[in-house]
Image 1 (cartoon, rainbow, N blue to C red):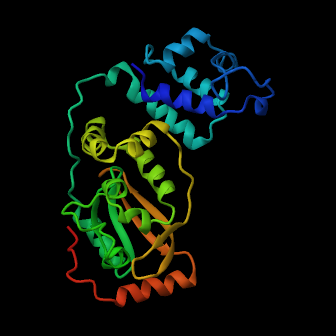
Image 2: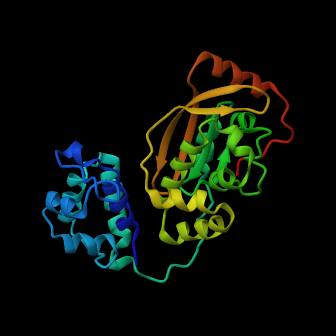
Length: 278
């Protein structure tokens, strides 16, 4: 059974142009990218062993083998860390009965107080599954009329893949969808990841599953939003990790004067009943 680690290695191998590594292009080869033989040679392992890893028949490659494959694939630091993580969750030690479990939603009082200090700025407390656990009034202002906070338990992934309004709201919808899907691999536990994916896969279909299997490490970018009222926002994101909670506090900062003015105007507009931070 193919593992996420095997899929990641195969995807990165297919993405490499042989000539960029000083190798000959294989004109008669149907599959794109680097041959398994060439990757194995560059990593110093046998072709048969590489095939077992890619196909999920060997789930316990050593750290040295993982690092050698990362070097051979020319992975950047983020991709290398992701590959190590996939090797960890693919190991035999993780082969247990995975039952979907919802992650805890409690936000510590001190974190809530920190969030309140950011008022009336734009900020949220979230987790890697995309649950929006708490938010400022500023965040409600910039998302008003988009449907993102309409759900009793708002989740960014559910919104991205199941609400048609998300494609208009996020100017770079495809990039944000890639980014959020990649974050799922950093979920607090396999049980939490299974909880969300079992809910999303039937609703989101291939748009979601293809991204989940692609393991495309996102690049930092300015968040561009098209508010229904006509404002165009460009926001920078600063993330404070809360490791003991498996949560993050994310602050959104205007990337230009025009966006700063737009945020101020949206904050002055009536948006109905405010959702309390909880």
